[in-house]
Amino acid sequence: MKRGPAFSPTRPIRAILFDFDGVIADTEPLHYRTFAAVLADEGITITREVNDREFIGIDVVESFEKAFRLAHRTLEPEARDALIRKKSVRFQEAIPTLKLFPGAMELVAAASRRLPCAIGSGALRAEIEAVLRYHGLIGFFRFLVTADDKVRSKPAPDVYLRALELFRKRGQPDLEPEDCLVIEDSIPGIQASRLAGMRCVAVAHSHPAHMLQEADLVIPTLVEWSWESVGELSNS
Image (cartoon, rainbow, N blue to C red; front, side):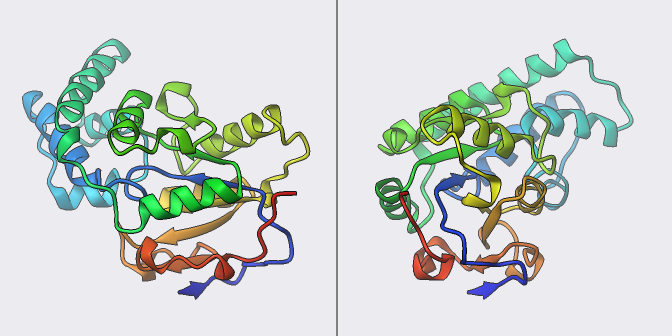
């Protein structure tokens, strides 16, 4: 584990926000396959290298818009939404093949016993809920903030600020950004947590650890999670 320079355990963590793709479920390969297949039908080729460099961490709306921009083509909102639906159908058909990352189920269960937990993701709500239900995790989260909420994509802080707003409405009216811990795997996600004023643990599932140093703490996998290493936790 490596601590970033901004890490401070002096303020108790009172809520935990999980990213989803690349943190809880090993969905990135399937997202790439379905994204690339839908784009191929439109005459656009995206390699895995380009996908991992340009698209991990941004939401599905921005992903399609960016792919068309990189191809120097326009994409109208109605056509974009149709492509998103097409990709989602293919993704959901393959959900039984998806696996959780080692340590994910144990961490989610333990975290939800300690603190209120939620998900802040750029994926579609239906996809996330389907994976969570399949693996028996749906009941561990108070709510989900997803691409369906139509907030700006990470690295904008909107996903996490919306989650903060929902935590405040659901029993924690005095919750502040610095009371929240975000668990991320992507560079845009870490940047979003920083802009939201929240602490961040990065897990090196999608990028090597040296690329994630803007986080407060970097761990190789969720198996290496240690509650002591993320500072003082409190339910108060």
